[in-house]
Length: 411
Image: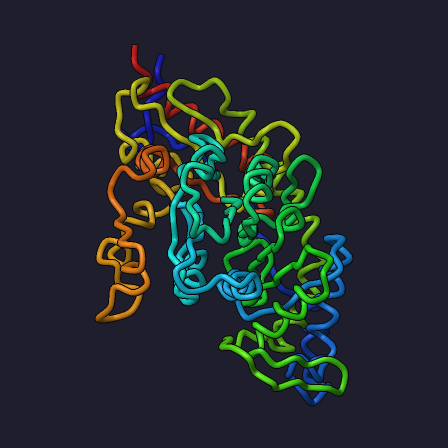
């Protein structure tokens, strides 16, 4: 017997509030007070940004990192340090935030989109290889929602061709790929401390420089600060090429120190809750859970399942509405459409009144360029995850998904 859905007047599955908690507290206040007492909020003269980076390096086992003003800035800095420039091509994911793409276009390089694995939602290495041309300078691997890309084949492809690999870790703090931390595998790892990420400094980011080459670190450090080189009492201002100002302030660094201490607990709770949800909905009709490959660890910035419409009698929008009525917040998909279908790419207008740099190659972005990615967004349902949830919250989410799936199950 199918249970009566709440959207049809039945009793909702979720009748109690979701667990909540405070993100900031006395630890952040203490660090901020100390930052203000320095009588400087400039990263080079104060100690908070330096401590934030030192703590990050210890946590991630890295030697070199650079603090920046946002995750978007982190990717731009990595691209600039890698020498990506006019007319170069950069391969990346069509399901991502604009922040992944801004740095490519500011370097007057051209985004090229590879297709995705249908259930991890990350780059398909075979598609990446098929998109490589003589212009390809870098690959940006987006670890979407805290789920690691299949990095070994991507690195193999890149190394054979001398292509830089940049990891977009904005959503993947303490994510692990075969035991290795995402962000330490490619040439650069780019992190975000935006307010909507695992940890927050309001806005901010970090670039991990993984080559062990100090010159690569110096290039990234300079690119984040107008190509100035500030070390010790020396400031080198012999500018050789253009670079932005992406400096992190001491206030951001101070909050970051306190937030990093909480990060292992945050990520462990999210990992446990996401995996628990997968176990709770495995085998349901019409449901394909968020796939995490064996040996990997996902830290679930969000959870995204897919519907198999051939096994259900409802649309994705009807399923989403029914689930919401059961007391489970969710949204159809992650972004409205693949990024190459947005006006910027359809009109090829990175700059007003110009088709540059797209006209360097004559590239055109068309519906169907990445059919798997397009289908993911047409069939996905995204569910928020919080470290403050309880196990009962996760079990309620699973029960509600099960109730809706069983109701709409095809006979």
